[in-house]
Length: 176
Image (cartoon, rainbow, N blue to C red; front, side, top):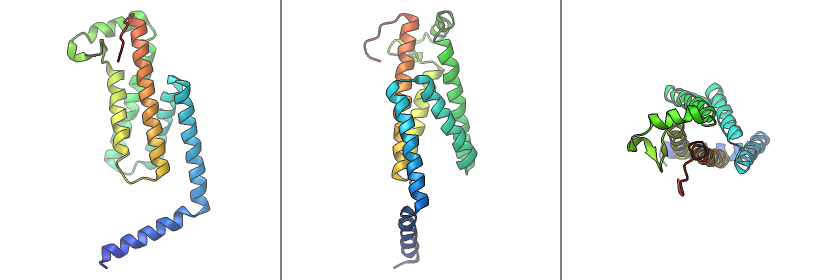
């Protein structure tokens, strides 16, 4: 057995012991509540709650978990993109405001499925990718379950946003 094999075996044993602890069970229970909260907003298709939930999680990650410059940068970018989404959610409710955006995104490369591929839609796509990439690292099953729920919530929010675009512009697009 190499030293590395030995260290990996020790790590594995330590993780098994940690998983059996009361503290870990408390964390799991809390994570299950977080998952349920995210899922409820998604099932209700409450875009404002979905966006607020994501912003809250991102802020908490930045304050408590950011332990590298690249993570800090990624979280700050995500928060900036969530702010853009919040601003566009206001714009997409006002026909005059959103018709200006529609004109500004008139080139075919700036449209998808007949709708403006505006900064909000770009931010949704970016965040879905960011969450997808998080699923590729070593995390607990509960962490991955929460990430998957967040990703689904953002996809639902993106779909709702597209519906709002259609409605305000009076565009009937069969499949977005």
